[in-house]
Length: 225
Length: 225
DNA sequence: CCAAAAGTGTTAGTGATACACCCATGT
DNA sequence: ACATGGGTGTATCACTAACACTTTTGG
Image (cartoon, rainbow over all chains, first blue to last red; front, side, top):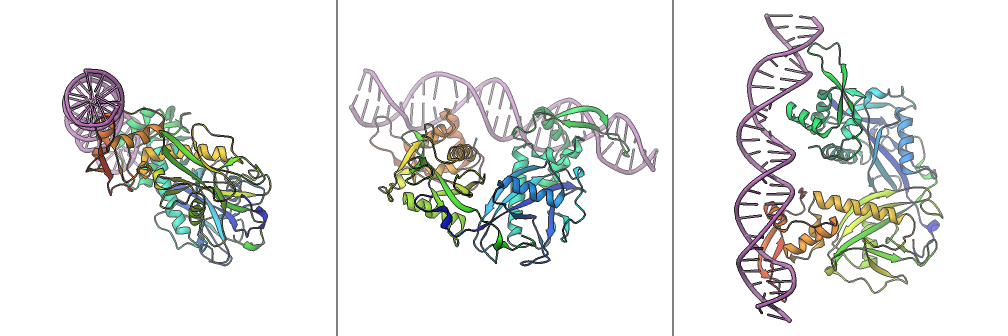
């Protein structure tokens, strides 16, 4: 800016990385890809790629996500921009990290699009990661917890219809602690975030739980816990 | 990443912009600079500049701030990265915005370092701004309010010794609403964020208020209101 | 003695937490 | 009939919000 010609500076590369979380099998999962090029060949990494010169950062994030997972309509928000000059050993790469939430029923991973592997890993039991991706993931996990406390993003991890226990499990898995069932239901109902359906979940070996649907209020920021 | 050569992509320019807030004269102020080059020549803008190839983003932000204001030791945090391809009419520029808080007694603006003017503006009465700087500033103001609610950053707007009324004014000015004096003091004291000194503020045309100092606890995140 | 801000407690209401038993279904 | 999770209410405690008068100084 001011006095300089924007074209004459030595420019860093800019990538987006997307930390995609889901809750499945009673566990918090993160999507990782296996690198098939150096540096860090054969290590697991957060999916991402270069920002094209004419696309916005969010477009780039959505595009990468679609390429890796074939999902649209995820909850997506910018997480943080990591710019340590040494974070990529080859050249200066600044990465804008996004974090995303999906209900994993919504889609199936592409059966390995490129040569590389794609897989879900437990956020609580991760392999070694390429670059500074471990610290990016740690940061994403903090942000996820924070968001769950102060907003209604948890609902983006659920299908259209769900039981209150499903919802409670989301919180328990991500906060890594148990919550009181009665207080939880009282809170959720008093906030008016859900509406009853007339449906019940079937084929369960116990009293069938009522199914609920998301209410419009979701999306507004509401303090939850 | 993966399969591509990082050096062969067309690269955007990357800048940092720093939104520096202070509270003075019973008002919330933002530091702006007047541009002396196109585009947007002679318009006011958020101070910032290009990231050098071997410095981190935070280093770049600190450097820019020092160049503009000759202040060190400000509260500084990354705000958001703006990357709309059209935000700079010349070329693709991605900007990593930081927001910063200072106690304005701590320093004096350099008497116009470069050719350009530097000045404080009321956050509630801004001139037209260059680029997308108006929306960056709006976003910064939201973040500032959020931070004041959930953390103790307000203290970084105060000198070493201050009265509880000084502190309350910070909140009132930034939230743009009045707070109850007794409840406010009760809250601050119960959180143990301040310690009494034996000093009183002098030369005031009323009962002299006691001066307080910051306690170590500040810096931990504490929910305030 | 007047103006101006400092300083100080109590009450009522609201929301958070802790806690235990009966119910409906599948096997 | 047993196992499994579903579903419900009450009492206590802590925090929030509303509110008015006396004190100390300078002018």
